[in-house]
Image (cartoon, rainbow, N blue to C red; front, side, top):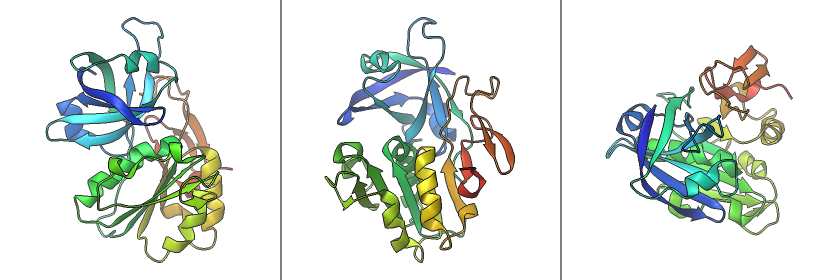
Length: 253
Protein backbone atom coordinates (compact mmCIF):
# COMPACT_ATOMS: atom_id res chain seq x y z
CA UNK A 1 0.00 0.00 0.00
CA UNK A 2 1.40 3.39 -0.98
CA UNK A 3 0.35 7.00 -1.18
CA UNK A 4 1.16 7.46 -4.84
CA UNK A 5 1.68 11.00 -6.17
CA UNK A 6 -0.47 11.91 -9.16
CA UNK A 7 1.68 12.65 -12.22
CA UNK A 8 -1.18 13.57 -14.55
CA UNK A 9 -4.96 13.24 -14.63
CA UNK A 10 -6.76 14.15 -17.83
CA UNK A 11 -9.36 13.09 -20.36
CA UNK A 12 -8.44 10.03 -22.42
CA UNK A 13 -11.64 9.83 -24.48
CA UNK A 14 -15.27 10.87 -23.90
CA UNK A 15 -16.34 10.16 -20.33
CA UNK A 16 -13.06 8.51 -19.40
CA UNK A 17 -10.01 9.90 -17.61
CA UNK A 18 -6.45 8.59 -17.59
CA UNK A 19 -4.50 8.96 -14.34
CA UNK A 20 -0.76 8.35 -14.12
CA UNK A 21 0.63 7.57 -10.66
CA UNK A 22 4.22 7.63 -9.46
CA UNK A 23 4.59 4.15 -7.92
CA UNK A 24 8.09 2.75 -8.63
CA UNK A 25 7.78 -0.50 -6.66
CA UNK A 26 4.40 -1.31 -8.18
CA UNK A 27 5.66 -0.53 -11.67
CA UNK A 28 8.54 -2.98 -11.24
CA UNK A 29 6.30 -5.93 -10.33
CA UNK A 30 2.92 -5.22 -11.96
CA UNK A 31 1.77 -7.40 -14.85
CA UNK A 32 -1.02 -6.84 -17.38
CA UNK A 33 -4.26 -8.25 -16.04
CA UNK A 34 -3.54 -7.34 -12.44
CA UNK A 35 -5.46 -4.58 -10.69
CA UNK A 36 -5.15 -2.00 -7.93
CA UNK A 37 -7.55 -0.86 -5.21
CA UNK A 38 -7.81 2.92 -4.86
CA UNK A 39 -9.20 4.74 -1.85
CA UNK A 40 -11.58 7.32 -3.27
CA UNK A 41 -11.78 9.58 -0.24
CA UNK A 42 -9.60 11.36 2.30
CA UNK A 43 -11.68 9.69 5.02
CA UNK A 44 -13.12 6.21 5.60
CA UNK A 45 -16.35 7.14 3.80
CA UNK A 46 -16.76 5.29 1.51
CA UNK A 47 -15.13 2.44 3.38
CA UNK A 48 -14.47 0.23 0.37
CA UNK A 49 -11.81 0.94 -2.19
CA UNK A 50 -12.40 1.08 -5.93
CA UNK A 51 -10.91 -1.75 -8.01
CA UNK A 52 -9.36 -0.63 -11.30
CA UNK A 53 -7.40 -2.61 -13.85
CA UNK A 54 -3.84 -1.52 -14.43
CA UNK A 55 -3.96 0.18 -17.81
CA UNK A 56 -0.31 1.05 -18.43
CA UNK A 57 2.95 0.00 -16.78
CA UNK A 58 6.18 1.97 -17.18
CA UNK A 59 8.93 0.46 -14.98
CA UNK A 60 11.08 3.39 -16.04
CA UNK A 61 10.40 6.00 -14.68
CA UNK A 62 8.33 3.93 -12.23
CA UNK A 63 4.74 4.75 -13.09
CA UNK A 64 1.42 2.99 -13.57
CA UNK A 65 -1.79 4.30 -15.09
CA UNK A 66 -5.48 3.58 -14.60
CA UNK A 67 -8.56 4.50 -16.59
CA UNK A 68 -11.74 5.49 -14.76
CA UNK A 69 -15.18 6.59 -15.90
CA UNK A 70 -16.53 9.97 -14.97
CA UNK A 71 -19.63 9.67 -12.82
CA UNK A 72 -18.78 6.23 -11.49
CA UNK A 73 -18.53 5.37 -7.76
CA UNK A 74 -15.82 7.44 -6.11
CA UNK A 75 -14.60 8.92 -9.35
CA UNK A 76 -15.51 12.47 -8.36
CA UNK A 77 -12.69 12.26 -5.82
CA UNK A 78 -10.30 10.88 -8.44
CA UNK A 79 -11.30 13.51 -10.97
CA UNK A 80 -10.36 16.27 -8.52
CA UNK A 81 -6.83 14.95 -8.02
CA UNK A 82 -4.17 17.18 -9.58
CA UNK A 83 -0.44 16.60 -10.07
CA UNK A 84 1.22 16.54 -6.67
CA UNK A 85 -1.82 15.17 -4.85
CA UNK A 86 -1.57 11.60 -3.61
CA UNK A 87 -3.88 8.60 -3.93
CA UNK A 88 -3.87 5.68 -1.49
CA UNK A 89 -3.20 2.62 -3.68
CA UNK A 90 -3.19 -1.08 -2.75
CA UNK A 91 -1.57 -3.39 -5.27
CA UNK A 92 -0.69 -4.80 -7.64
CA UNK A 93 -3.24 -7.51 -6.86
CA UNK A 94 -4.36 -10.78 -8.39
CA UNK A 95 -2.93 -12.98 -11.11
CA UNK A 96 -2.48 -11.38 -14.51
CA UNK A 97 -2.16 -12.72 -18.03
CA UNK A 98 0.66 -15.13 -18.86
CA UNK A 99 2.19 -15.34 -22.34
CA UNK A 100 3.79 -18.61 -23.40
CA UNK A 101 7.43 -18.31 -24.42
CA UNK A 102 6.72 -20.04 -27.74
CA UNK A 103 3.81 -17.76 -28.63
CA UNK A 104 4.37 -15.33 -31.47
CA UNK A 105 1.14 -13.78 -32.78
CA UNK A 106 -1.21 -12.48 -30.09
CA UNK A 107 -4.89 -11.69 -30.56
CA UNK A 108 -6.49 -9.43 -27.96
CA UNK A 109 -10.28 -9.06 -27.82
CA UNK A 110 -12.22 -6.79 -25.50
CA UNK A 111 -15.17 -4.49 -25.03
CA UNK A 112 -15.60 -1.25 -23.12
CA UNK A 113 -13.72 -1.38 -19.78
CA UNK A 114 -12.23 -4.71 -20.71
CA UNK A 115 -9.90 -2.87 -23.06
CA UNK A 116 -7.93 -1.20 -20.23
CA UNK A 117 -5.79 -4.22 -19.23
CA UNK A 118 -5.50 -5.40 -22.83
CA UNK A 119 -3.74 -2.17 -23.74
CA UNK A 120 -1.20 -2.84 -20.98
CA UNK A 121 -0.64 -6.31 -22.43
CA UNK A 122 -0.27 -4.95 -25.97
CA UNK A 123 2.25 -2.36 -24.86
CA UNK A 124 4.30 -4.97 -23.00
CA UNK A 125 4.33 -7.54 -25.77
CA UNK A 126 5.35 -5.28 -28.65
CA UNK A 127 8.50 -4.63 -26.63
CA UNK A 128 9.19 -8.36 -27.08
CA UNK A 129 8.70 -7.96 -30.85
CA UNK A 130 5.48 -9.98 -30.88
CA UNK A 131 2.86 -8.99 -33.47
CA UNK A 132 -0.30 -7.90 -31.65
CA UNK A 133 -3.82 -7.34 -33.01
CA UNK A 134 -6.45 -5.74 -30.78
CA UNK A 135 -10.13 -6.18 -31.60
CA UNK A 136 -11.97 -3.46 -29.68
CA UNK A 137 -15.74 -3.35 -29.28
CA UNK A 138 -18.23 -0.89 -27.87
CA UNK A 139 -21.79 0.30 -28.18
CA UNK A 140 -20.58 3.45 -29.95
CA UNK A 141 -17.32 4.93 -31.20
CA UNK A 142 -17.05 6.83 -27.90
CA UNK A 143 -16.46 3.53 -26.08
CA UNK A 144 -13.51 2.53 -28.24
CA UNK A 145 -10.13 3.92 -27.16
CA UNK A 146 -8.38 6.10 -29.72
CA UNK A 147 -5.42 4.59 -31.53
CA UNK A 148 -3.19 7.17 -29.81
CA UNK A 149 -3.47 5.14 -26.59
CA UNK A 150 -1.81 2.18 -28.31
CA UNK A 151 1.75 1.58 -29.50
CA UNK A 152 1.93 2.19 -33.27
CA UNK A 153 2.95 -1.44 -33.85
CA UNK A 154 -0.45 -2.71 -32.67
CA UNK A 155 -3.10 -3.41 -35.30
CA UNK A 156 -6.40 -1.98 -34.02
CA UNK A 157 -9.75 -3.07 -35.45
CA UNK A 158 -13.01 -1.72 -34.04
CA UNK A 159 -16.59 -2.95 -33.94
CA UNK A 160 -19.53 -0.89 -32.70
CA UNK A 161 -23.14 -1.85 -32.15
CA UNK A 162 -24.39 1.32 -33.85
CA UNK A 163 -21.92 1.18 -36.73
CA UNK A 164 -20.33 4.52 -35.84
CA UNK A 165 -16.82 3.04 -36.04
CA UNK A 166 -15.44 0.01 -37.81
CA UNK A 167 -17.50 -3.14 -38.18
CA UNK A 168 -21.24 -2.69 -37.59
CA UNK A 169 -21.96 -5.43 -35.08
CA UNK A 170 -20.27 -7.38 -32.30
CA UNK A 171 -16.52 -7.49 -31.92
CA UNK A 172 -16.76 -11.28 -31.71
CA UNK A 173 -17.80 -11.22 -35.38
CA UNK A 174 -14.19 -10.34 -36.23
CA UNK A 175 -12.37 -13.14 -34.45
CA UNK A 176 -12.93 -15.77 -37.16
CA UNK A 177 -10.50 -13.95 -39.45
CA UNK A 178 -7.63 -14.51 -37.01
CA UNK A 179 -7.85 -18.15 -35.94
CA UNK A 180 -5.10 -19.38 -38.23
CA UNK A 181 -2.90 -16.38 -37.42
CA UNK A 182 -3.13 -16.21 -33.62
CA UNK A 183 -0.99 -18.36 -31.36
CA UNK A 184 -2.81 -17.21 -28.25
CA UNK A 185 -5.94 -15.21 -27.48
CA UNK A 186 -6.49 -12.87 -24.53
CA UNK A 187 -9.90 -11.39 -23.75
CA UNK A 188 -11.55 -9.10 -21.24
CA UNK A 189 -15.13 -7.97 -20.77
CA UNK A 190 -18.39 -8.80 -18.98
CA UNK A 191 -19.86 -12.28 -18.79
CA UNK A 192 -22.23 -11.56 -21.69
CA UNK A 193 -19.20 -10.87 -23.88
CA UNK A 194 -17.51 -14.11 -22.82
CA UNK A 195 -20.68 -16.00 -23.72
CA UNK A 196 -20.60 -14.47 -27.22
CA UNK A 197 -16.91 -15.25 -27.57
CA UNK A 198 -17.47 -18.84 -26.50
CA UNK A 199 -20.08 -19.27 -29.25
CA UNK A 200 -17.83 -17.56 -31.80
CA UNK A 201 -14.90 -19.92 -31.21
CA UNK A 202 -16.91 -23.13 -30.93
CA UNK A 203 -15.28 -25.78 -33.08
CA UNK A 204 -12.60 -23.37 -34.30
CA UNK A 205 -10.34 -22.67 -31.33
CA UNK A 206 -9.66 -24.44 -28.01
CA UNK A 207 -11.44 -22.42 -25.35
CA UNK A 208 -9.02 -23.77 -22.75
CA UNK A 209 -6.30 -21.64 -24.40
CA UNK A 210 -8.20 -18.34 -24.31
CA UNK A 211 -7.23 -16.36 -21.22
CA UNK A 212 -9.85 -14.06 -19.74
CA UNK A 213 -10.16 -11.77 -16.74
CA UNK A 214 -13.12 -12.50 -14.47
CA UNK A 215 -15.26 -9.40 -13.93
CA UNK A 216 -16.74 -9.74 -10.45
CA UNK A 217 -17.35 -7.27 -7.59
CA UNK A 218 -14.09 -6.62 -5.72
CA UNK A 219 -14.58 -5.53 -2.11
CA UNK A 220 -11.33 -6.26 -0.26
CA UNK A 221 -8.98 -7.21 -3.09
CA UNK A 222 -7.02 -9.71 -1.01
CA UNK A 223 -9.30 -12.75 -0.74
CA UNK A 224 -10.58 -12.07 2.76
CA UNK A 225 -14.26 -11.33 2.12
CA UNK A 226 -15.07 -13.79 -0.73
CA UNK A 227 -17.34 -11.23 -2.41
CA UNK A 228 -15.62 -11.92 -5.73
CA UNK A 229 -16.00 -15.71 -5.62
CA UNK A 230 -16.93 -17.17 -9.00
CA UNK A 231 -18.15 -20.69 -9.68
CA UNK A 232 -16.15 -22.34 -12.48
CA UNK A 233 -15.71 -25.81 -13.97
CA UNK A 234 -12.66 -26.23 -11.72
CA UNK A 235 -14.52 -25.18 -8.59
CA UNK A 236 -14.79 -21.86 -6.80
CA UNK A 237 -12.41 -19.13 -7.94
CA UNK A 238 -11.59 -16.27 -5.56
CA UNK A 239 -11.11 -13.81 -8.38
CA UNK A 240 -9.10 -11.18 -6.53
CA UNK A 241 -6.52 -13.68 -5.28
CA UNK A 242 -6.53 -16.71 -7.61
CA UNK A 243 -7.65 -14.65 -10.60
CA UNK A 244 -8.79 -12.48 -12.15
CA UNK A 245 -7.05 -14.53 -14.85
CA UNK A 246 -8.97 -17.63 -15.85
CA UNK A 247 -9.68 -19.52 -19.05
CA UNK A 248 -12.75 -19.22 -21.23
CA UNK A 249 -13.33 -22.95 -20.88
CA UNK A 250 -13.56 -22.56 -17.08
CA UNK A 251 -16.63 -20.33 -17.20
CA UNK A 252 -20.14 -21.63 -16.60
CA UNK A 253 -22.84 -20.00 -18.71
